[in-house]
Image 1 (cartoon, rainbow, N blue to C red):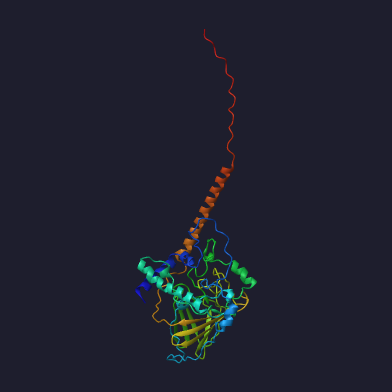
Image 2 (tube, rainbow, N blue to C red; image 1 turned 135 degrees about the vertical axis):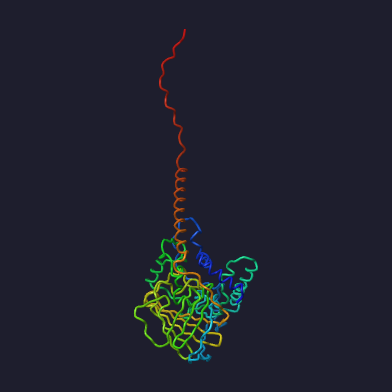
Length: 415
């Protein structure tokens, strides 16, 4: 890892500690604290991401007729036989950072229908964008300025159109009526036009507690480190973002009653060379998918119920790749389960750096204080403008005739 990258990562970590507004800005949402003194507008409606780098729509019927192979998703290959650990388990140990597919979208635009692969022309557009992204840090460093170039670590995308492979249309299923209602009530710094008065106005990621699960298994713009550690009877998935670690026993133990945590309770087993992980007892409060992953729902307010369940399958396809499949179900808030599939690439040169953000740091307090000052200032300015408007609307003062002079005694004449 280059010195430039080390400096950039430490700077990005420091920037997150100093403020969330910059992180939100890169998602297209304007900063709220310190951005404007105007009264907060109504929260923006919840919307789904999906545009794939603004690629122009295709004639899908004509494309399907000419290139039917673009609409076929091959089954996961199980031909590769990985080496074994000293105790006999398939060896998945290593560093598998998710920045290698950070430019891939959760879901694709509706017009793509059930298309699985980008065309050659579309892939060239995506590849060119990724090349600019990879070159940005060096160019920015050379210019002597630190900005988004050294912040965003999106090193690759995919030839696939979307992470979602089920439903077949490459789109996330709808929320249930109860899910939509709760989503609309959600609070997060990633929502536009929201005021801040207490910690409950922020999500778990704003508060540096956790991105939650399964959101933590998918890319953000930085701190994308994902490391697999193994020991007899256990697999650990170590995450760079918010220093979360998932400890997964392989001994068939049941879940521990009603105990919940942000990463849930996970139990694993081997299906041949595939590691299968079942997770439930996930603490509600964090959105199951985070908007920082391209194409996820906007705002980080998708709800999760106590019935949420996640099944993951990690299949090594060669020495340097793992196919990761994740199926999420929550019958209370989602109308159907959905499955996402991505390919992890080994990068054992990737190193973790301190994630210098923690619950109770200064930023939540700063948001609340700044937002209250904004509102007070906006109220004072509104009152002043109202007074000025009322004064301008008043007709000019009429000339008031002088009161008649009081009669005076006649002057004496002198002889």
